[in-house]
Length: 162
Image (cartoon, rainbow, N blue to C red; front, side, top):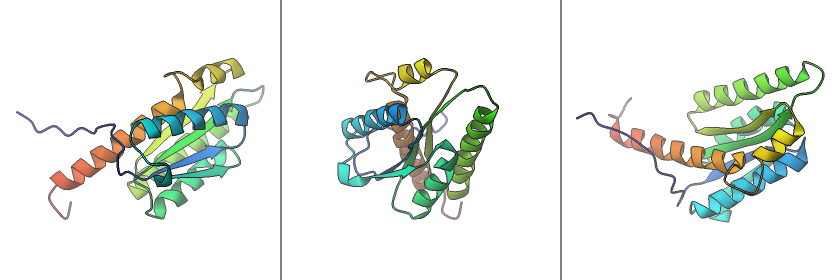
């Protein structure tokens, strides 16, 4: 039987960082509210949560990288909203945010959950940031917690020096 490593969504004792973009604040504040509620439900104490606000989705990777590099968080939740317009700006910002968060996560070996909406319309963004279980901020929190727990399990089970 192979050994299996999984993570739980119990956030008790974890320190979580949230990087949230101010651009499209109507959407991102809803994502943040969903994330904060999900953290509380998972057992993460308010005093163990750090929220960093950045101008837009393009700036999320640097905020996430610096927050994680400080060693004060076990995982980072990245929240933003990039809504397609009439120019290719959407493509550049969405790609930069995605690749930047991924790069920072791999460089620092700190779990980072990508809760940046990339939608074609404002209506789609509103739907994905609602007050129900479809809130992508809440979903990103669960991903971050699970990956923090997976990381802990891996570090305990792998031989030292690995």
